[in-house]
Image (cartoon, rainbow, N blue to C red; front, top):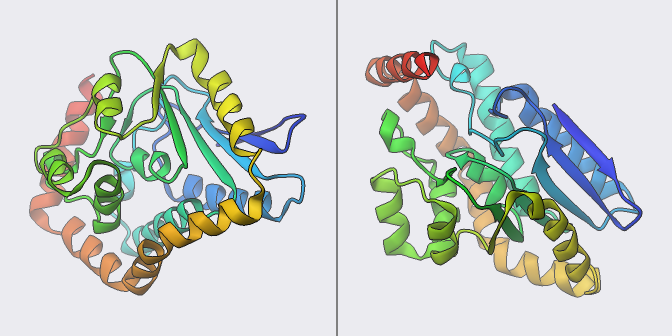
Length: 252
């Protein structure tokens, strides 16, 4: 589900490759967490470009992890998601997102963890649209949006389930560049090489200082976050909404 490519430089390329749309299930999240630990332990690796082998960057969380769920598995699934956010957002490695397609909802948990984001131009969108299916984005994902856009704009975007086209995402600071699809990965490599010109010790410490309080709060509130998620998802009303939404997706 992940393809890790080596380069002749000091960084690797991580490609999401779970067909059909890179929806994140328990297994993919677990693989992502293992991969980042191995890359951080690799003395030849100073950075990771994250992209996708599919036309979609990531369609978000796998709804089948939440619909008619096995609570034990769903608990493990959410723990892996929390770990993914902590591991990727807090990684000392340089993280560049080469967003080559749609990136709604949970896909933003990956994209927003990157230090720099380049998005392909086109009809696809990015944003947090959980309220459309009766969910609220977890507070830490909402906070990730707020760090990029500011409080008022983030609240509006989340409340109204607004998915932004690439140009709008650039305007609001959600991504750093918008380029034609064929240029996205190459530009991601160029940005990586620019960032790697800075010695790791100062750059990584600066990153840690800016992200410290976010990561500490998520660590402290993990159980509370999990409890809220389980309670919300297992409610009959939300299960009904999820079922309806899944049926609509099957018709497309």
